[in-house]
Amino acid sequence: MAAHSSHVAILLCTHQGERFLPRQLDSVAGQTHADWRIWVSDDHSTDGTLDVLQDYRTKWGEDRISWVRGPGRGFVANFLTLACTPEIDSAYYAFCDQDDLWDPDKLEVALAWVTSIPPHIPAVYGARTRLIDEDDQAVGLSPLFPHPMSFANAIVQSVAGGNTMVFNHAARALLMEAGPDLDIQTHDWWLYILATGCGGVFHYDPVPKVGYRQHRKNIVGSN
Image (cartoon, rainbow, N blue to C red):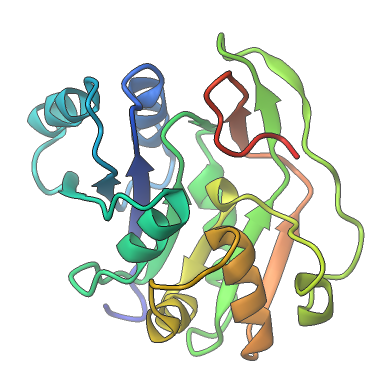
């Protein structure tokens, strides 16, 4: 991918996501930064998730969204497998959950920082989140982490959800080198550790740009 490109590969993992997925996809479509494509790994959904994806591919076109069958080993393996898929090649990448809402300038704000870092340096943007309920209403904020972002911090504290993360190709290359078959707690904490432990930089934005949905079927909640 050309160094000057601003294309973002959005890495979306789904599982039984039909209820909230359309709202998330609509929020992606409303981004002020319009150079993106969604790559989906669906982890064996048996509800209407695949029907939702097909509806949006019909509406948007095949060049905007495509999907594959996930490994069926939980969300961590699903995200890592998708992030390590060789066919996905972009200048920038963004993890995406199936049930959140992105603010319209989420990608634009994240890229303003990530693109300021030389492309050979692994760079990861993460942020605070605005907690929302099942009706899209704000119910609070995630914790605000005041300590400097560094490897020393990363090995003891996860500071940003993957649903906020945007990262460059150098950071993605580290994920691919480490591989998808790892026994780790979460993919987002792993990326923070990996990037800062290998000479990269991590930026924590205290201003939320994602509505992090809290509902009864959350696998990982606001903590």
